[in-house]
Image 1 (tube, protein in one colour):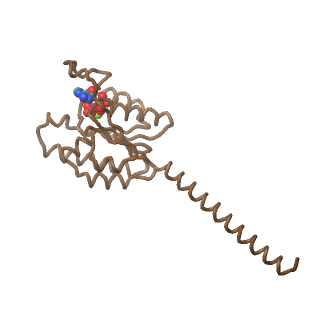
Image 2 (cartoon, rainbow, N blue to C red; image 1 turned 45 degrees about the vertical axis):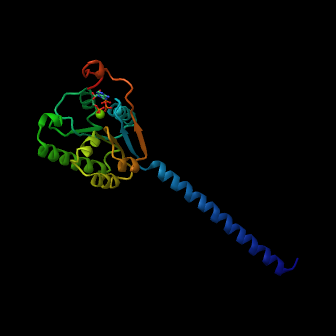
Image 3 (cartoon, protein in one colour; image 1 turned 180 degrees about the vertical axis):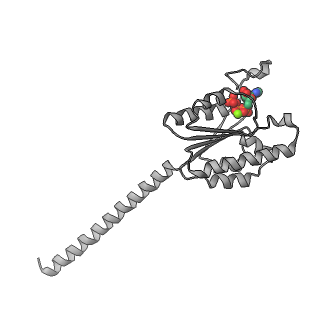
Length: 210
Ligand code: ATP
Ligand code: MG
């Protein structure tokens, strides 16, 4: 073997090595991207007319608390009512911050201007929670109802969700989720009403409904 040949083989080797390294680097980058994808905060939407949308969000909060996560909750629409979930989360006030829109059910207040103002206030709270990086999980309970009533625009809500901290998971609940919100979500679950005690004249029950 001449020196010339030897050099040629080395150059080939070097080229092959370079290719191998490039492929490995590509693989590593793809893995990192997958990891980033898996670890970024997700947007979950619970919608549909069956019962269980808020319940499922509260169930997820229990999971999150099990891992010591910080959780923020903003309840739209529902106001001053005493609920089991509120009483429960009070026991976890080191991890859970719960804000309520505060004016009671919209059909009680009969004041659209006031409803819009409180929706806006709750949205400002929600945006602050989502962008702060202080919360691992933020639940925007019944936000879809506010959107359906046009108290907030879908565009500004989508902007606020997009601006959230990269690690923050968000759950939005409520019947009639707008299509654009479902398009932006990572997960959409639709609860289907097969049967509800309300139809048999059974009223909302403590411990089951509130
Ligand atoms: P929950 O908070 O019990 O998980 P939800 O979030 O799926 O219910 P909402 O649309 O927020 O449902 O309704 C709030 C209240 O209305 C709850 O008390 C719930 O039991 C009741 N409800 C839910 N679905 C129905 C239904 N199909 N018919 C009548 N009442 C319902
Ligand atoms: Mg609900």
